[in-house]
Image (tube, rainbow, N blue to C red; front, side, top):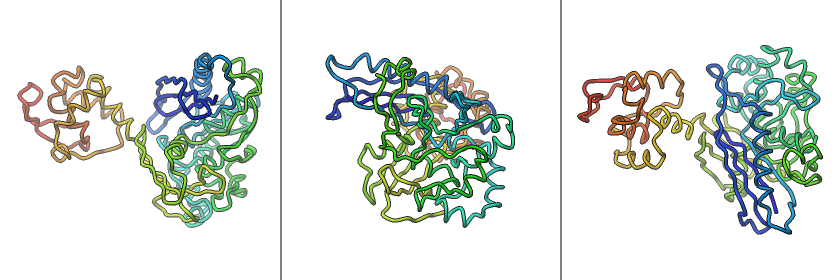
Length: 393
């Protein structure tokens, strides 16, 4: 038997399968990230990620068939993320999430100026953006120096869980290749000079490939998870790349377009190449390369709309949207949704608070193709909220 867990942006999912890949049991638990300030996106690594891995592992282990044994487990997760821990693997602050967290704008600019845009693209394979982990380490060093000085190690989501399970300090090659500019993608190794400049006293994790066994479940972790001590633990990697591999994206030219909380594109390439508009990364299998790109919102925008307009079931939203012509009468998508946008939407359309009459025109159009904030359009229905011109957001 094999146990796999994926810690996503909006939920954690687990599955128990046999050696043939047949699903024996599965579990899902929804969760949400913390948005304490504009541009910040965080998660309580121990209170949410580790707790959910423990609870889900225990639930799945209780469903192992009589006489069967667990051969190995693996955990993937959102990334690249930054978890700073002390010697006891206690997170010193909430985990800073991937590209949805945009706090390090100034650090992106300063590191780009210091290291050189062309040099970063050549050596790391990807220009610095909110997806890069290096500027977020620099942000902690500048803005939370006491946290940075107390830290003795830095982790991603899956490597933090691997450390909790096994005590090993590792980072998989793919996740490392998204920790720009710390990793030299062409060489499949740490970009030592730049990594030491940014990480300071923090040691660089041992690099492993996502399919490598990094250690075995320790006694304390076994007591917390229900997974037998000594069970091999596989490194895992960023969830989107795990999903690409699982659907067969393994050879040059293979490509996946994924719609999750974010939208993501992954394509395997046959030789190293870089482009300012894309991310060049290590792949899942040893020595492979990939090109990728993503947006900061996709499914999460739908979740926001669902909540804002009364919480209608997803099937209801889809049925309403099916009646709207493509393009939603000229509406344009705008991915930068903020809580202020929700407040403006509710003021403009009071029915959005209850999700009742808004469903006759506004909600179905937004589901089909959310309009650009500030775009003025006239509702043609006969309900009270449809009389006159309104600002959508």
